[in-house]
Picture 1: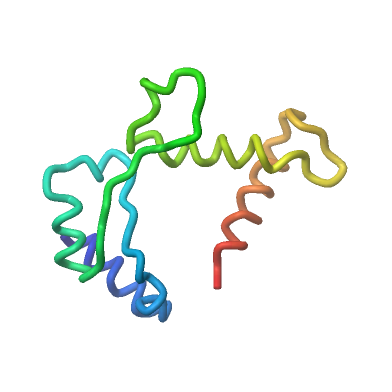
Picture 2: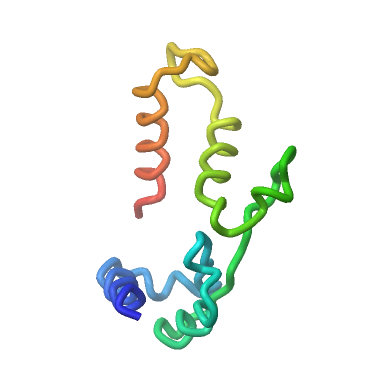
Length: 110
């Protein structure tokens, strides 16, 4: 429950409490713990649900579970983001990948 208190403080500090009308989406391995959604709902006072990745192909049965959501999302984003300026798809540059990921997260900031 300490993590939920931390999340609640961070949401309030960011002034985002009024922008979360749809609630909270839980994913990752911890979201499968019994009572996780209920505890989140009770602590934050918001709707909470556990989700798994969608829009995947191939080994869908193996990776369509909450623990694989973050990596699946990053892979889908990378597949659709295309090459960076001056680069080519699949050039293997760790710097270009980290740059794309950091630009993605900066784009999420208000």
